[in-house]
Length: 575
Image 1 (cartoon, helix red, strand yellow):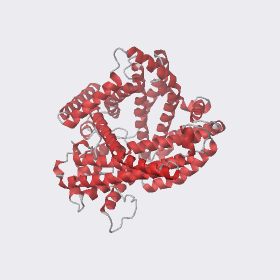
Image 2: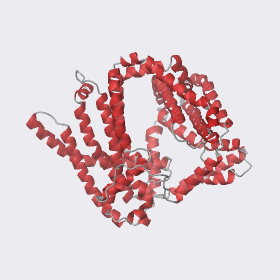
Image 3: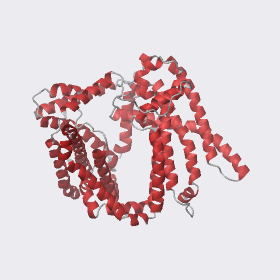
Image 4: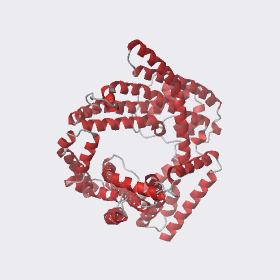
């Protein structure tokens, strides 16, 4: 049976590769492939020739310098992922079989164990490809030690794959056995609760030292000592053993770290094989749902989805489109949920300020980093706009709306969600900033005037997000074939090249859109300085936001006219 599975996997890879090659006839895929290959060459492979030895020595030295912190951070990340897999509501799919595999393999004389082996065999290509890409990112063009990183990362990802499958099977078993299932499988849930309790107790025991830390680096080093001692060290040992394998500084370290990692891999493998959950019915239903989603519009959800606000009987049409798009996001999160988080942020900020400057400073820095990420990358992740509605373009064309009004409502969908998240993070940074600092330097200056800086950032963020949302919706109008629809997003070097092109173009357009506002804001700031002798920050930020918003309104008016002339049959969103 293994030979048949290998043949089936090889044929699937061959057909998938042939399809990708045929797609290169389309300019967007060819351009994406060229850009992706150039990026891989200049970023990782260009220096793999004469400077390979120097690069290897530099990479080895850098890895040895950060191996300890990376091992601790990686073990914490794995612990959080394992705990979330157990306690997060809702069960995932253990194995995602396609509709054809369900129809041909499930009725065949194939045992349950052989189906599990086939799924694990089929996942090897994705795991190896991901490990190779991560090795290029982490090791660059250096060949020395890359085999250890690649092999260790493969073991780590296989453990994660098996453990998540085991958790999904355990959840399925609990549902199938009802109350008796909870009685039989209480031990894993108790272990997760005990692990979280041990980690919380360790934090409480180290709280005086954490509160006395003056900087974020001291807080991290104290947490690192906590993770290597006592019960917390024992708790993190299996996760640290997995992370230590790809981060081995030498071949000897790799072979010493290999046996514990392989033992953890074997334990998860046996656990998955010994699970008594029947996954065939759930896998068949999941495969049928995926196939129907690709052929037909998204099916209606059971029950009423939460509404962000009450829609009036009359008003601007943009409000109705925005209301619709916020309902789409409301299945996962909502503005009301973010508003409910404000008191929690306030309480945590006050507690962190009382705990110590290092903890508060670390949390404030994290809030600022996440806020910047949300502003610059949020529109690529939140897609409740025309990109989501593009497969239903024929239906949108029948609505009694001007194209500009429709596009304004579509563009505002991501803006509202991302702005709410950004403002929440900026609020956290403002609360966690602590008392104004003394002395000179950028950090002390920011601490003294952080409310002004953060208020300016809060005023500027919506316009920057709006400009990027307009660009994303403009791509959907002008180049619909470049926009992924509701199906799974494309992967591979060509898809990466397409996203790099879109990101580069978006950054250029963002800079060009901000430039006129920056010029006007500079004139306003200069006039205010001559009158008051102080350099304002919030007012220029508001000026930039107003100018960028005006530019976006003009752009949407022009795009609306193009949208009105667009033929619905010409939009190849899925191609």
